[in-house]
Length: 498
Ligand SMILES: Nc1ccn([C@@H]2O[C@H](COP(=O)(O)OP(=O)(O)OP(=O)(O)O)[C@@H](O)[C@H]2O)c(=O)n1
Image (cartoon, rainbow, N blue to C red):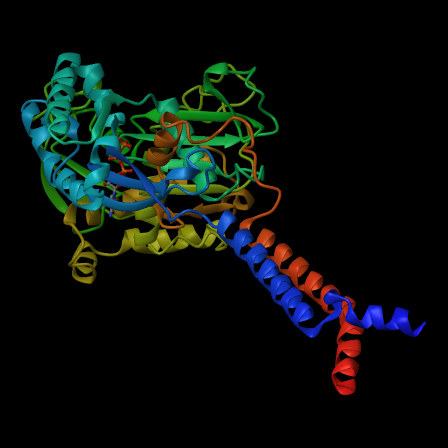
């Protein structure tokens, strides 16, 4: 017995030095395990990619720079707008008689883009130019002038070191669908397969409505249907673009309605009392939206004077919509099929500019109240309006009564929003720092950044993985300490004997 005990006490594994060594090795192993877990899964230092889109609209051109982490190309939800630049001067379609100026107009914003995108990324950064309704109209009116504008613009853009991917006119359907993609992408609705938000876009020359409806599968009026498969979900989108129903062209349509007989004076209820301006008939009718209606034998000019009456303005505006024919189960206007509006909507571009100026972006306010406020605003004298807003461009200022009335009329009479569905509209400029509009959706599509199927994701996020390994290591350490406790007590006894 005593010999056995002697052997046990003398075993080299039971000496204090051995136990200390084992403990130290154990601690080192656990620290190493946690360190490896942290380092192995730590995201690499972020490298970014960039994309540039020029939105060549009817009233102006804007440049947007987008940025996303390089290794997340296919894992969406991460593309952000980092910079925007408003091109000085009018939209490129206004340079039809001086095409080279269209190219030149873009250079300031392009130089800004050169500063904003890191130098070593220029060559790999795609640059797109998409033109919308202004160029659609110019192309209809004079296709060679439109070609020349594109030539000038392309030449100017090729001077830069970015990877220029071409300039083209977007169809109205593309404009509507990409606006819808942008809004839902930024809201993280696509990735999570949530109920989508409809998109209402009001430009200068066209307006788009796009939404998913449970009553629309694309079989009725297939030309209004766009189908997508995004992150493993199928979407059947209803979309329509009304050319000539953007804010500026709708104003022309309304004025054309009031000048059928070529009068010398128009008393316009959509402009403030006290507003008076001599305008040219030639300028008013210089658009394919109205050119065919130019009154024969009209004088060169007319005196455009305001009377400031919301009700009468709304009556005038209603007359630019045709509600009399519809070959489908239901229509918005001009014989265009539209299912009943459904779900929440984001309204952007001029919808936002106008309603924000008028302080009418709160859609929880009943429609009757919104109309009352607009009635008061339209009835305000022009002298008061200019005195109250001396920093606002006079052209915009003169048109807010018309624009607000047009927006309400388009939504309620045109698209059939009711008091209830109106309250589901949100007037938005940006979502999470990126502008609402077609440009982001366009770039995501062209760079294949939205996968059709849900991307594979690691079973645990980085933080979860590290936490689990750390907890396991701590538990292991505790178990280890507990298991060698008897050795420690024997050890201390031995030390006492000594
Ligand atoms: N502070 C502002 C800025 C712009 N606008 C109006 O908003 C419209 C421009 O909207 P935008 O989306 O920029 O239109 P474009 O892209 O130029 O037009 P489109 O898409 O039809 O080509 C114009 O009618 C302009 O008068 C406005 O009322 N108030």
